Image 1 (cartoon, helix red, strand yellow):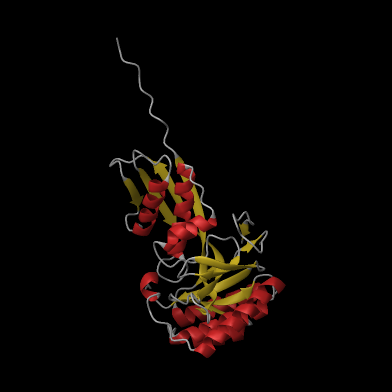
Image 2 (cartoon, one colour):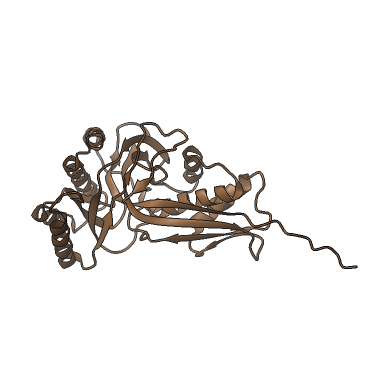
Length: 316
């Protein structure tokens, strides 16, 4: 008599996404302990992660294999799950965010991974839990919050939610090479006590500017932050990019403070936007070759507190 077929439990699957940033609007060091901070500039570039239970080896694997930080995070979450994947699992990470450029590619990988594995294994992943996990891996950007936020990236801790801005374009160039986030954050910061007080002032001004949706002031602060960062990671194209920004009537210049990118900020709602973005892209191509145009994200809602964040959806 044939034995009844034993039905295997269906494989659990979860997906997660996270956006990248175009560098930061502001990054520096405040006078307080744990003073390293940044202010995010979310853009419409994404990472998507998918976790599917079961693998040929019976262990948790990642594709592509170079995503070792995401693999480590997946294993950490699985180890804490009440019912982990007994048959292992496969984590697939797909991203259109350039790596090593200061665009939060690694942070987006990790946040998307946390969401995907958490959904597959029925493990709640509120922001505070993701922060605690990521702090064990590397300094991390604030891309887990759907808003412009001030974030302590070295300790992986939210400082404050600033809000949302009208859509901007960023006409970006890349000076080449790649920067390792962990190595960069080991570099002693050369900022003086006066510099730290300046960062307090800039953060206050930026907070007010975001709430007032004052793009001109946002651009001025981003440019000042880029200039102050020159002592830490010099960008040869910064002065030429500032000149192009003035020529085309841009808002200012934003940079990947720990990366290789620079970009001209433009108000996407300006009636002259098409002319300005075309002129900026042409001039940037003459300066640096390849040019990429990014669109910043706006958000439907932006709360002042984010405990158990349920905030707004992004839109370009």
